[in-house]
Length: 272
Image (cartoon, rainbow, N blue to C red; front, top):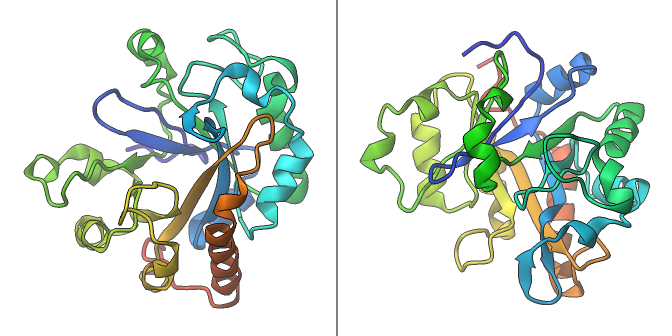
């Protein structure tokens, strides 16, 4: 894969899996720093809403989100990369675009406003451009795949070590592997198959199914050099999660603080 670009881009493929994106090509020094250190990323996932039942977010849910409040809430966790969806999987853009419908109100410029705040603070900006779940766009916009970019493959893992992934180019050629869980059997498998220099990101908090995400188990994967990703859902019109998530979020907040004090040698670093 070409690595000329200093940006991560991504796309979701229906029925296969997805990529996350890091888009900050105007901040090359910050991106290089992020690539050399453990990524700690916790965010309020705008794809979904909780009021109180989890459901797909509608365009108007985030029409009044204040970008500075959103940014500060994330930074308070000890997150070292700003993250926000650019194009929701329901087919709505959070930035001015002619590629599809744009969110109403403040939602129409949420992503660029967050990008400017992140640049001012020297924080790399991650985003998510989901065209796979929007089946019309995914089948008519192949040109959205940008050459010379880096990708992080969200590996399907109904069970680890499935034969379909042995020698698969998505596993072998991606710049990083992502597990939307922290199940030991999945992460041990991915640690065993990742190639030199390939990053591995685990999910410290997110999936609600029993056994998928245990925020208390972070130290094991911190010592293994994994990057960390976490997400919760807001209760519209507030992007913040409900009170029921407080205990889990406190664990993540403390974990990120301890990681900052005692950084791990990254498994994917070029020094290895």
